[in-house]
Length: 305
Length: 186
Image (cartoon, rainbow over all chains, first blue to last red; front, side, top):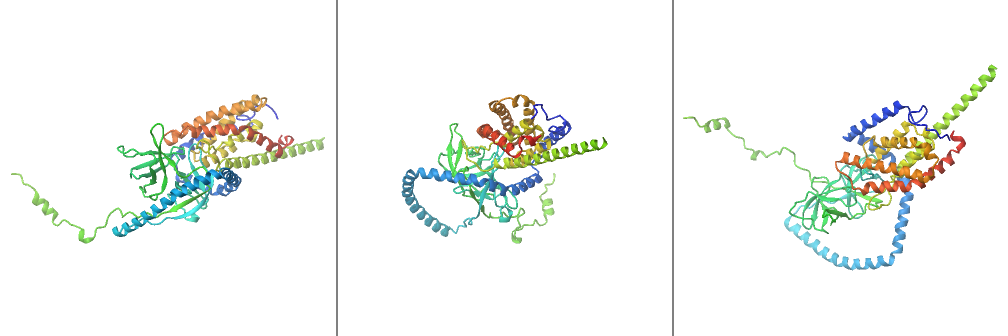
């Protein structure tokens, strides 16, 4: 192997200077063009995901197996402690179950009395996470369901125990899910039991920030955070996590779902109530047509003395 | 005499053709390997400090390829690799190419020095480039998203990439020796 510096600018090296310059200019142009996020680029990206999804799924199998083995080993070594903890939790939960059943019966009675129209049930589709497309720019995962399985953009995605994000692009056999932790993620949420409305903003860390809440109310540490359903995209009442206030006094949300070890996710299919048309069609009886409006106007005119 | 001359010409043509086909095989192998490395770094991994590390294994590969044989990576191969990474990372298209071209350029300028030094010096040089690149990425995120990301989301992948350098550098070396023994590399 020769030690001379063959490469940029040398004949037969990486390229001729003209090509380097041309591609550099092209790259800079592409940065500016793609910054606006044209639809064509989204389609190209989704096409690439469709292509790579089976490959990453195949490559990821040993990693998934390794992770499962690791988890199993950890569980096995901590079996006695875990058992004691579970027994204590079971005792607590039995009391909660009793309370929940009584409350459920009460709610059903009230709903019947008030004739309340309640939200419909969710249907869901379980999908496998095949690639973690996270980087400094985005926090997204790729799942192996797409248009073929009736997945649509905007559908909420649930992990084993909590809401994790929403579908942002759909291909034939794969979809990209924007996680709650992403810099671009903005989810309207509600705090329980206070009912405080806020926006959950991602910052690429695992604890997104609570923003745009009423200044008079402060999010309480430990309050449950659920989706509010405002905006008409994500179903209301999906559990996200609990409020945690950091050292700087900034309210953040501890996610219920561990975004680290997601193997499978559920894509929720929830139908929102359609909003009425823009121009409300009033029934004929309610329409008031001003009769002799012109004459009325002239009647109302005050003549100058 | 004429006969000897034409024979020599034919012989040279055969050598040139075989060298060209070797180059083509090497380029195809490099590109396939590059795609595989990029996909490998996208497989869901564990998290460190609540951040998925995503080491930039392709940077290590480009560093190794640029050092061992700069002719192996054509500018168009780098453009393709950069484009593919940008498509997967959802970063503005073109950034990957500029960064990898920079990495390739830095390595080539210091090639003579680096080849005579041990792996520790190479690691130190690589680390400096990575710190510089991730610093640029930090500002690019701010430029494209309007606000800075959490610092640890930049530091963790950067450190993971540096930690992966020695094992992966050795791995690429071993793979090259297996697939292309030194006498075939030209």
